[in-house]
Structure formats: structure tokens, C-alpha cells
Length: 107
Length: 120
Picture 1 (cartoon, chains in turn purple, cyan):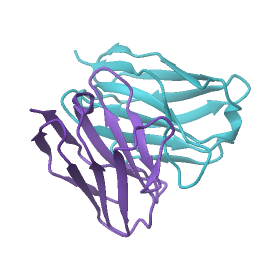
Picture 2 (cartoon, each protein chain N blue to C red):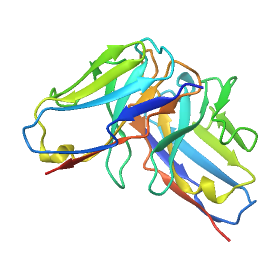
Picture 3 (tube, rainbow over the protein chains, first blue to last red):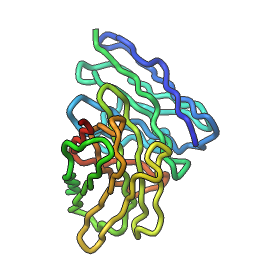
């Protein structure tokens, strides 16, 4: 099975900051990597699919990059509504898997 | 508009069974692979199981393999997750999710979730 490891597990940043979350796969997953935002009590929200494609309706401050085993999600200018937990997810294998999550707090 | 509506959650004793349902609307149900994803209290998202559009292929996480069975009734646009031999570790909010229209697969559509609590 493919293991996904995110770092950091949590971070705190200020409005306007540039934030980067990394995700590492235990084996190459090509570009089959998606990013989700999850707020308590709500359904997860797809932000980025296929490593770098922005989901419709998602603000352009969210960008994704990477390939193979190493991927990043960047928020270019943090906004108060970005407070949430972020997850990467691989769809390279039929047995999908998520990273453990990165909890983002706004200072 | 794509809508996914889960039902069937509730309180069940350890060792018991429960069947979750997910009714889809706003899309051609049989065309799309579907999955269940869960979140245990204080934990992260965990992919549980997936099924092809035809229902001919199913996939399970190791944590539920042999205890959970995923199926679908395309004539009723409904996904089912039969959960047997439940333990406290299965306590979670369970979400059904529909894949997008392009490859590689991703989940742009989610239900609101249904809570399963396994407790004596």
C-alpha cells in the first residue's frame, strides 16, 4: 500500500503570509495527487487535483506542484477563511490513501 | 447539481452490523466510481472502500477488508456499505464521495456525512 506523509502536522501563520505544505509518497505516484481542505463539521473540499489543476471555484492563491514522490501545496497570501486542516490524497493505486493532515491556524 | 445523501448511521454495539446508504442525484450514477471515506474523532481522513461504476470492481482498505462490503444499485442510484464485526475503531463520520470526470481520479463531490458510533 502507498503511504502518504505530510509535513508539518500543524502550523500557525498570519494573514498575508505565504504557506507551504509538503506531501511525500512512499513510492512514485506520477502526478496522481490531490489536495483537500477540511473544516470541522463540513464535507472535505477539493482544492487541487492531478498535482496542479485548480478545482473550479477555488481561489487562485492555492497552487500545487510536484511529481513522483514529492508534492507541495502553497497558499500565496493566507486569508482568515483558510483556517482548516489540509490533506493530500493519492489516486495512483486503486487503494487510495490520505496523508495524516496539516492543521493550519491563523495567528 | 450533484447531490450525495448518506443515511444509515447510528449507535451499534461492538461486534454488530450496520448498512450505510448513499443516494446520488444530478448525474448519471452508473458512469462514476464511488468511494467511502471516514474520519474518526480527532483523527484524519481515511479512505475506506471504492467501487467501479458498473460495480464489477471493489477495493478495500486493509483496516476493513473482510468485514465491510461495498455494493451499488445503479437502477436506484444508491451506494451501500455493509459493515460487519464492528469495533470501537470504526466509530467515525462516514462520507460518500464521487469521482470527477477526468483522470487521475479525485473527489470533487462529497456527501454531508453520517455518524457511526460503536459502543456498548
